[in-house]
Image 1 (cartoon, one colour):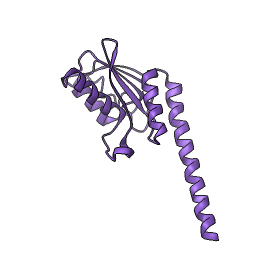
Image 2 (cartoon, one colour):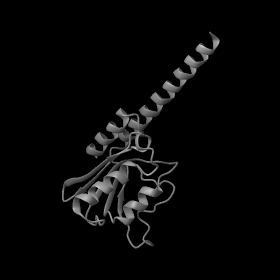
Image 3 (cartoon, rainbow, N blue to C red):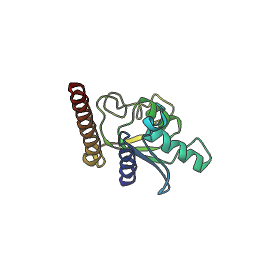
Image 4 (cartoon, one colour):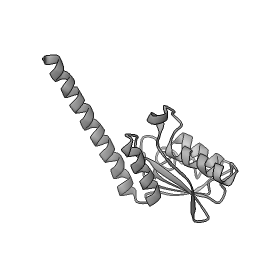
Amino acid sequence: MQAAIQEAQKAAVIREVPIGAVVVLDGEIIGRGHNLRETNQQSTAHAEMIAIQEACAKVGSWRLERAQLFVTLEPCPMCSGAIMLSRVEEVYFGAYDPKGGTAGSLLNLLEDQRFNHWSYVEAGILGEPCGQLLTDFFRELRQIKKEQKKLKKTSQDE
């Protein structure tokens, strides 16, 4: 999870929502990703998607059957779908996402045995530092917007 946190920190540096993910196979990181939605202007540029794509390229297959995914935030529906379709065996995440998480918060797609593939899921791994990254990021973003609004008002008053 520390490697996923490092990926999330990379996202924060470039003013992306700080979410990071890594795919591990046989004890080796084979895929890394952090949020790049704003940078790439692509709604699918989530940390998990990027890490899964890199992992698939590294192993030369769309199947990641013995792999583990570590991600700082509970996966969304799109990422849960990609995890299922790539057959990731285990998913470990840090912070819960009560507004969009589908690994236990809103739904539990990943462990739903009605699908042809499901994953073992463990939540709350380093949940506090993972959540704090997001809290700090959004607090700073709100402060920047507040300051920009204040500057705009000041320039209009002059």
